[in-house]
Length: 255
Image 1 (cartoon, rainbow, N blue to C red):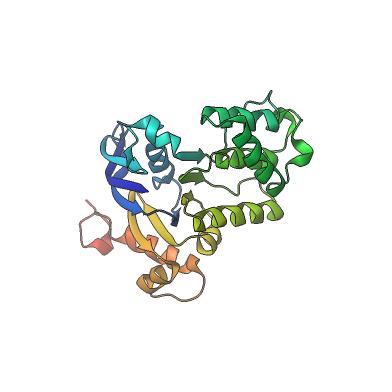
Image 2 (image 1 turned 45 degrees about the vertical axis):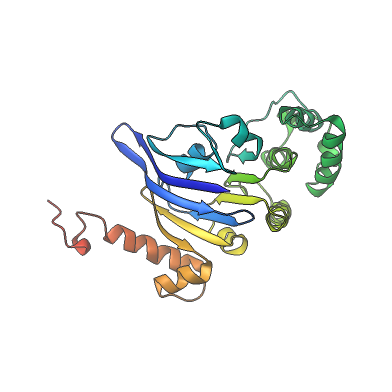
């Protein structure tokens, strides 16, 4: 459902994404880990069509996001780490607005809202202006509205930002449930524990490349570690650093 083919993005002389090729099939929960500036968010923005690749292409549900944007976006939802909401609207109004963007009729909006509102514990906030809501409540509104049209592909960047443990659990449960029902999830996080708990496969980004991808068990085996995934993540990223040109461990001169 997500296909990346030799995806490249330059910002001036900076190569933010460096030839990523990846397939995430229908119903897979794929999480990406990596340090800051590893290329995770830039890759996400190319997947959802917010920025244009320098080279390569991204397809969502079989549609090229650059040449068939309307078809791809109709099947896609994206929640950034700090989502934009219309602050003068209430959550109820924002849900209706989002549903209409995706050409849902009133009955479908009402039915989906009646399912999602109690799941995200939004009943008490439905008719209050969004501008007065906490960051965590806004995050729940954003995720609920993104799920409203039952997207085939759901892309989310740092979903647990601002969420208390109770509502983090709610979000985890709902995303995993939808994934089991066939929704493809592409999640970026700095929290290794979230990736380990949620993902079917995990990709580790380093300097614009995917340096490892697999199940948690496969990543541990590659790193030669046991126990928490954090140890494997640190070992794999250290290995990537040591293999870079100019590093003494790579056998190249640093001059």
